[in-house]
Image (tube, rainbow, N blue to C red; front, side, top):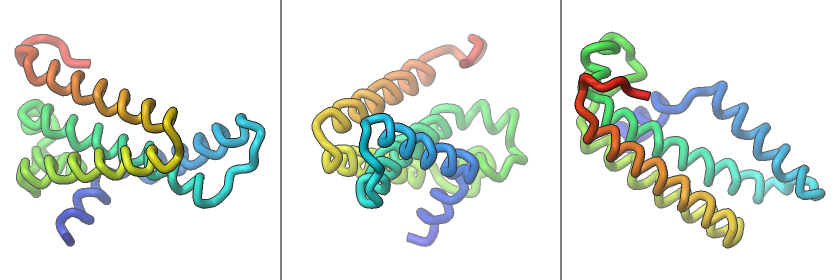
Amino acid sequence: MRRGILIVRSLNRPAFTVLLALCCVVGMAQTGHLPSTPRLYLAIGAVGAWMLFAVALNDIVDAEIDRANLVDDPRRMLAARAVERGHLVGVAAISGIVSLSAAALLGRMALVVVACGLVLDSGRSVFLAAVPSEWPRW
């Protein structure tokens, strides 16, 4: 449990968290309704957990490249060998479940959007894992 919290803290970027919250508030305000605290927390949870899923999956796929380029970066825990691959797989799986659960509580359209985002990010990661390492990465 403690290691999981450490991993989530290292994958989280404070500036991104603030930006995410502001975007959620603006999105809710655009609908013509003031954001309610529970719905705001659900939106932040849905998108934040999806982003955590994306970052964890990206770190798994890019571990070899990160070991060559960013071995001294403490935010790249897998490259620095601070955690094992299974830990990041667990964080990604739990984040995906949390993201889908929060989106389901927001409504059908939120669930569709988050599910599509998870599928697209998974597909991108699978594609990048299959690309030869001498090809440029994006």
